[in-house]
Image (cartoon, rainbow, N blue to C red):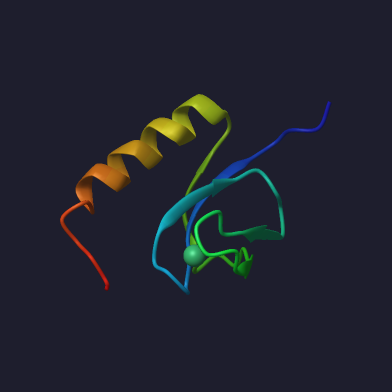
Length: 69
Ligand SMILES: [Zn+2]
């Protein structure tokens, strides 16, 4: 079995956080930008999806008062 890694990254285009299990690139679910998952864009890595999504929730609630528009 291959070990999947879940990564939380920040979109350089819209600045939102998202989650991907892909190893090299991801597509932002908010603005559709293709993002290369370089280490500078990855905020955190997890071995399971549940932990990753909980962390993502925390990130989102923290940044809810922060708008880039
Ligand atoms: Zn985006």
